[in-house]
Image (cartoon, rainbow, N blue to C red; front, side, top):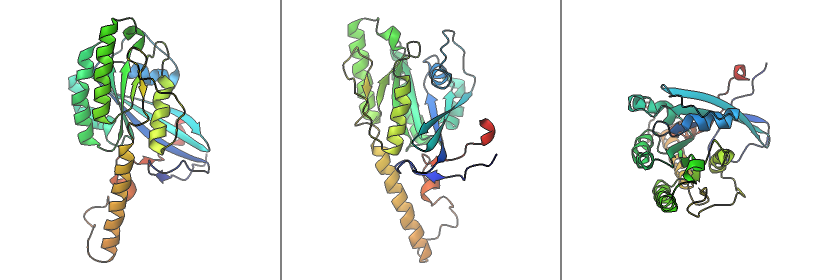
Amino acid sequence: MQQNTPTSINRHDPIPGVKNQIDIQIGLVGDAQVGKTSLMVKYVQNIFDNEYTQTLGVNFLKRKVKLRQTEIIFSLMDLGGQSEFINMLPLAAVGSSVIIFLFDLTRPVTLKSIKGWFRQAKGLNDLAIPILVGTKFDLFYTMDSQYQNEISKVAMEYSQVMDAPLIFCSTAKSIHIQKIFKIALAKLFNLTLTINEINLPGDPLLIYKDKGNNCINQSTNNNNNNTNLRRKSSHGHTSNNNNNNNTPIQASPIAVRSSYNHRHH
């Protein structure tokens, strides 16, 4: 089968108008048992399993969706949350266009851990779009209203500091699963969504419109800076022989590249 010509685009570029195929890597990180694998399997295979299976290292699944004339290949990287797997964080963070930070709404300690996960992932890839996701909303909804208000308030504060869309979801009840990835696409390609926001504590929060937009400006600035470097080099003022990464695509770890192999069809 003849392969499509690989195409490289930046996250702030519009979706190509001609038939195209691009790969988007998304990392899923967070403490153990917060539901990373469940979210990935639910989104890719529409399956939910109540039994917990520990992720040993990194799980990997792909899903293809169509947007206009473009086939989007989501490559999802699920990192095990145990401390012994922290050295594998680069596999989920480096090269990802989006990093989803997950916490269990019924366990406040997992929300507190987001600080550490965010700091380490940002150190590896400071241009990826962060998305903060609270899982197990179906269980959270049955808990004391004061607890719900407190967790919702803290989560919204984290979302503000991280400049990350905030989404409460449930894989068991299929709440907001698809919307997580629709928001990811919208932020990557600067698309406008008509999904209503939900910002009342106790409800499945969905706050995204003014979050995760700054990275687009950072990516644009980086690309402009790299263009200036190349122009200087061509005039003999600056040499980049020792650094071959002075191109807009290579310089940005969140660049979206077409690397899907047809043998995975």
